[in-house]
Image 1 (cartoon, helix red, strand yellow):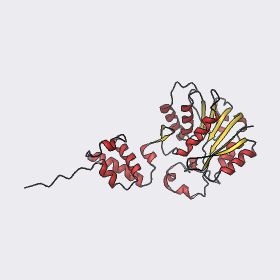
Image 2 (cartoon, rainbow, N blue to C red; image 1 turned 180 degrees about the vertical axis):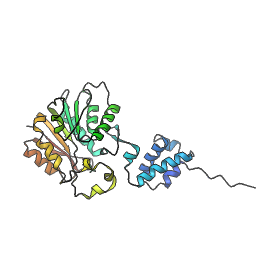
Image 3 (cartoon, rainbow, N blue to C red; image 1 turned 90 degrees about the vertical axis):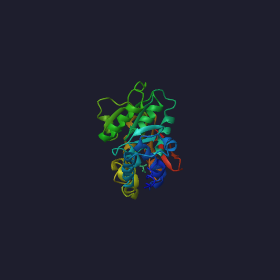
Length: 289
Ligand code: GLN
């Protein structure tokens, strides 16, 4: 009696070929399921995988097919070269938001011990990236979501040097400047205020598509025309911005002219918009007279 050849066990190569997901996503999920580094997918591509590993990958794959964002499945997203924890309580950091970080860093480049405020910090991506690049900066960050602030504080604990001269980030819960006004610690005047607020108009059909369906709706839309938060942050900035201090926003692809008009109407100087890597005016700001 002869026995047929044993059924070959699946390898990572087999799994990647069979997956309906885009290759990059399948690779990220496979590394997460196996606890492997990306290079191991190549060096160990012919290694047979055990049943547990297969089941782990297929469970993650099924969540992605159901629409859950990859960053939420693996619990991490890289932003500004740092690995941020991500949960369903926070907006997933986007590459275009690195432009806001770069712009804020430019604005404070020649200021020793600059004071920075991040309004609507979410995962803390902007605040932590600035604090990491400028260890001497004193950073304050506000969010109305306690769950988001918990994620942000964990990111700071993981990613920042506890001995940084600027000290720990001050996390405050509340609505925009209201959080500062009600804080027991008196807020300084800031050299730069940054915000990536909810700016998608409630009528925008993108809210019901893709990853956005799984992100906190309050981080995405003002349930109005998309400019409510930006109006409030411009209008209330006076007492919190040092003379000559900068206010910079990320905003929607079609909002740059509206944001410039809001800043100019409030007396901001040198108001301008900057293009992201896709050539879209994504960031607008100015300096307080
Ligand atoms: N940039 C995000 C998007 O369009 C929106 C982020 C925000 O509203 N702040 O998916």
